[in-house]
Length: 210
View 1 (cartoon, rainbow, N blue to C red):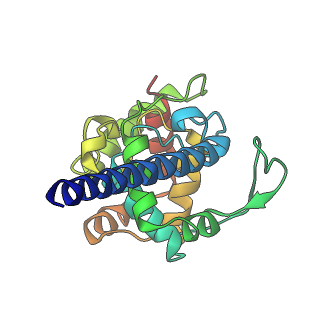
View 2 (cartoon, one colour):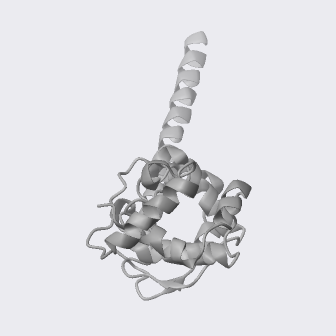
């Protein structure tokens, strides 16, 4: 009788373990599909080739999780974009809709996935060297505390600006100026000191990184 109980207990334990493995595999497959969905717009491993869509590979996980929360809460602009690739090619969606469909756990998985990828800087962006130099001065004066080394460090948890698409950076600054994107207080205080020329200079400075 004792041996039978041990055998049954062992089989139950094995069943629980196998069931757990199946769940892990299903979860991994689901995350794979979510990553694939992100890649259709943001490029393989988040290395966007569309100047209006940000490069997200290499962003810190905390920053990406926070960004997804702002989309979920509709605290950022959510313009419609057309899927350029994949099964939904030609269909339109917004980041608010996409974020709303992704669970908190999956959001963390996605954030960790892209955080482990390298940030691939946009190449062949024409920039004005004079404006870029002015932007460097503005950055060192007002932005460097939160965006160190030209905004190239993921550890700042403030996105990566160095080598980001200029079109996207320019639009992001416009959204901040229009009050369409939330700012932390210390950023707002510095931001109010900038003018339109400063904004454009910063765009060229960040775009000058290769």
